Image (cartoon, rainbow, N blue to C red; front, side):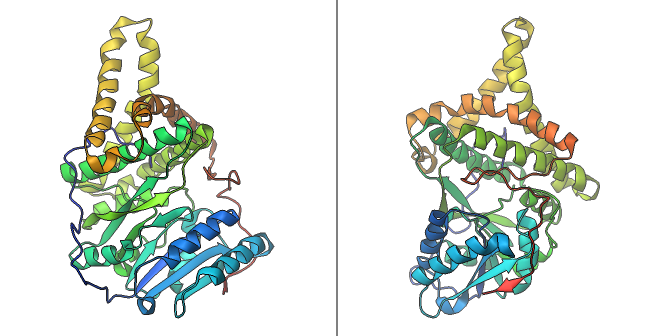
Length: 385
């Protein structure tokens, strides 16, 4: 998601401050894990994460989603090898070969009918959830939430971009929790998210004509008044080393969010419209930031506005940095680079608008393998392995 220019403190409390000692889940849980043209290392990493989950095997169903047809043969082979190497005896871990894997919403629409859990979680390919995260999610749902999500922590990287991105991710999570406490609205993430099957029914069928399906969920769930929360057991995600790829991904997020607001606006309640307005205003402020900063060099009248936006952004960063849980997610250099990174990232708003006007629905990847087009549909049908 794109960052929100909203206060990062006070933070909304976690749904489950402490899991009671000895507590064990009794609910059937399904994890949907899309893996689309990933590297062998990603399959291996994801398989180790599945094997490490602290959840009763008899109550856990894991569905790995890969592409059908000849285009998906490599993914299917890598998935089968990784599954055999790490599968626990008695674990219900299956491979689904789906006719549509891009965008992710298409894959989820095909996979949901195969999920037999009372609770369904969605975890992306490069995400490693904490072993106790699924159990905490079920407990949080039983305590009154309809949907909960875990924070995703960027793994340490060597380059300046990855260090800045790690801090930016922390600021985003702090902003989302701050917004939830301040205004009662919640930007739902597309991964490390768990909900009752009945909650998912509110957003099904998932939009498969867009690349930011989770923001559509956010708007619709907020309009429905669904209670949501946050998990303390975080996930880890691969470091982003390429600045260009990160900016293309930001443009995709921005394009998807703006389109989601436009598409859903007529049917939104006041709560949903509040979330949409916060997002659009944040993106407008981001777009104005480089223009005001450049103009302030030659036009003194613009300097107060440029300074106000820079100070607002700095305040958001410092609000996250003050929290010990966020501060350690990168080093001092990474934190110092967040505001300059946001300034550079503001240019992605213009790229997003250009792509939107052109009717571009492509999916920009930050991982090895480049871009995947949301318009392309792989050959073949559904297979279950």
